[in-house]
Length: 157
Image (cartoon, rainbow, N blue to C red; front, side, top):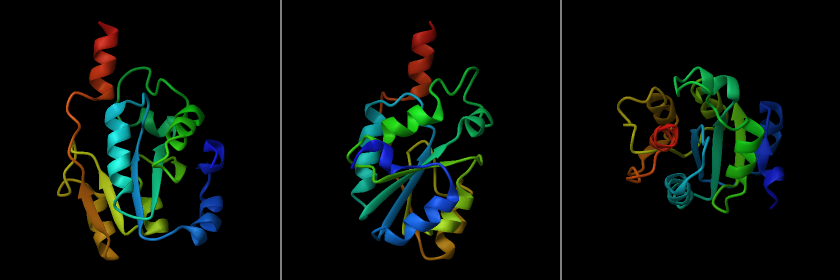
C-alpha cells in the first residue's frame, strides 16, 4: 500500500478505519523526527507482536511540549508521517495532538502497547489504561548507539 494511504490526520477517519483493523492490534507512538536504524528495528520487532502495527505520531505542536529541544521537530508532521508510513512493517499512522496517546489508546484498545527500552512499564502513565481492558504493555530493548537526541548533539558540534 502506498505510504500516503496509510496516514490518518483525524480521529473521525480512524473510527471508520478501525472497523477493518486486523487483530491483534499492536500500537506504539513517538515523534520519529529523524528516522534511523534504531527506529526501523524497533518498529519491525513491534510489528511481529500482532497482525496490525499502528503508529501514533505526535503532531508538531505536541512535540514542542515534550522538551525535545529547541527547533524540534526538525521535520513537519506530514513528512514524518510519510516516512514512517513508508516502512513495510507499519500498517497505519495516526497523528495525535496530545502529549501522550491516552485518547488514541482508549479509542483503539490495542491488545499490545509497545514502547522502547528508554521507558519502563512501571513509569508509563498508559500502562494502567492498557491493562484495564486486558491489553499487554511490552518494552522493546533499546537499540544501542541509535538515538535521535544523540544524533542531533553530534550534528550540532
